[in-house]
Amino acid sequence: MRKLRLTHVVFDLDGGGLESLVLSLAACFQGTDVEMSVISLSGREGSVGRAVRPLLTEYRVLKPMRGVSLLYPRSLINALSEMRPDVVHLHSGAWLKGVVAARGARVPKVIFTEHGREHDDPLLSRRLDALAAMGTDCVVTVSERLARYMINGLGIPASKVSTVGNGVDTRFFSPSDDHADLRQTLDLPSNAVVVGSV
Image (cartoon, rainbow, N blue to C red; front, top):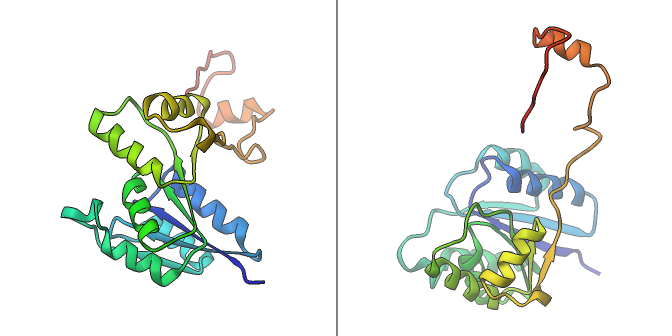
């Protein structure tokens, strides 16, 4: 039985949350029955792209597509046709183009992950996202609030929407019991009130 071929389509791999997720997934799939590849639409490799490249079966950086590429993203269709993935996983910034290309390349399954939106979108953007959702098998959100927006704001059927909360590596990001060293490192008095924000 052959390995499952998975291709992630991202706008860019220069740094950030979704980019780190792609890197983490590539590391997790090493030595498994999943062959992972990535296509970046920004025209540049990016700092995360350089880090993830050795972990991938293939990493393609496409030149930015202009004009009618939303309706016919030829270079992305060609890349997916050559790579022949079983699943395409689209990420924020690559949804409609990615769906059109995946369906044009006859990819069996299309997943989209929305990593976050700061505000409600203009009507045209919502219509384009609703159109993209029609060609998407599963829409993944990173919060329940975002899931509600996708269902109520874009009209995506609830049966297509799943939520996978943002994960935090609690082994790495864990509170320290040694606050004295931290205060000393930051040159803070031992009795000072300290407020932190992330």
